[in-house]
Each structure stands twice: as structure tokens, then as C-alpha cells.
Image (cartoon, rainbow, N blue to C red; front, side):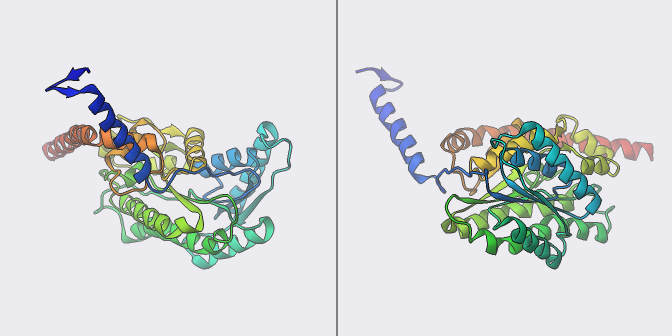
Length: 340
């Protein structure tokens, strides 16, 4: 018998590893599942531009019936046309006509989003997939931002999700057969606080608590909840965000490049279809998911194993990153004081 270390037989180590892996297969919750989208009704908030629009194109090309919800009727009409054109070029549903409807609504108002959901159900059937890709960011230090701007972010990013889920849930619960899905878009700023994003981060951090609690409440109804953590993404909203972004925030963000909306949409849709709870969009996001895993659900065996093995080392990496951020903040403040 082969021996290693202090006389521990290799076969014993093998048995221990096997038992550990077997235990991990058993204790993961909820169990892995697939979310089909072909022939199913998907409602997408924030669907007139950016990630929501790109995701609508991909889902429609795979045969989903699409309902786009956003505030601007003109942008919605353009989005409807863009989805139809994309499907015409990339249809993966065997030539089956794809239905795309649009509804003008403001997620900050429950009455408004509820009316849109009711109309979508009336025209396209029960909601089987709800994608909440709307969001707004007005960066700036906590002291600089007005209460009105803070309320706008909280009302859109947090209450807007609550309103949309509250309106759609009765219809989602009536879905039969394959698992239904609710996908909430947070942000990497919903995983770690960033200078200049205090209120935005607060509204995005809150979505994780919403998602984790909802998953426990809805698992027995065959509804899977996902939370997507995109990085800075090249969208019209991000272009507007850059106008307000503090120079120090830009410095802290220099190490990571903004992703394009198409790539983020591909990652998000793949994660939803795989039934993942935490969905990252790049390597940085995957590492953040590991270091922030905590008590979040994890249906994937491989990701669960990565979390267990890498969480400790990733915490060390996080200390180095944070040290760099705080050094940058200190040096910037000293530079400002010197100029004064």
C-alpha cells in the first residue's frame, strides 16, 4: 500500500476525498435544473436599450415570446423593430414566427408596471420568465448627491424590482411543467462597495437579500431565481453615468475594462438557462461571486467546489485589492489638500 506524508495511506486520502465530493453532491441546494426558453413568454424590464435589448434579441432568436417594458414609447418601438430584424437574421427556432410586444411603463409605480404586466399576459400568455434589467446610476460622493437623486436610484433599482415581481408573480406561479425563472440584475457594485457609489451600491446590495429570500419562498413552486452581477457595461446608461463619475472613481475602475452589452447578455441568458443563482459575466465577477458566496444558493457542483477551495485564498487577494484602493484614495486626498 502506498503511503504519503506522515504515514497516511493514499487509499485513505482517496476515500476521504470521494466522501467529501459525495457529500457536496448531496448537500447543495437547490439542485441543478435547466430553464427552457423556446416557446415561452419572457417579460424584460429595461428592454428598450442596453443589456435588456440585447438579451431580448438572443431569447427571441431561440423562440421565446418577448414582452419589452420600458418608459419611452419611441425607444420601445425602435427596440421592437431591432429584435424583429435580429430574429430575421439569426432565427434558431426553425422558422417559427416570434412574437415581440412592447409596453410603456415606469417600474417606480406599481400601478404602471402592473398594468403593463396584465397587458402582456393578455396578449402573450402567462409570464414564465421575468428578466429585470432596468436600473439607474448617478455616481458621486454621498455628500454631493441630493436626496432626490438618491430616492430616484432606490425607487428604480430596489422598489422597481419589488413592484415588477409583485405584479408578475401571480402569473408566474400559474406556470406549469418546466421551471419558471425570475432574473434580477444587480451589479458588481452590489458585491463590493466602491467610492462614489454609496446609494447605488446600497440599492444593488439589497437585491441579493431579495433574491435569496425569494428563492426560498418560491422553490416549492418550481420557480428559480437568478441574480446577475454585470460589470461596467458599454450602454447608453453607462455613457450618461460617466458624465457624473468622480475622477477618483474612474481611477479605481482603471484596472477593469467595460464589457459590451452583447457579451453581458450572452452570459446572463446562459446563466438563466442553466438555472444558476449567482451569474457573473467575466473573471473578476466570478472571483467576486466566490469571495461573497456566504449563504447564497449554489446548484452547480463545480462552482460549489470552487467556492470551498478558493474562498480563503480569494479573501487574501481581496485584501490586496482593497489596500490598493485605499492607497489610491489616500494619495488623491493628499494631492487635493496640497493643491488647496
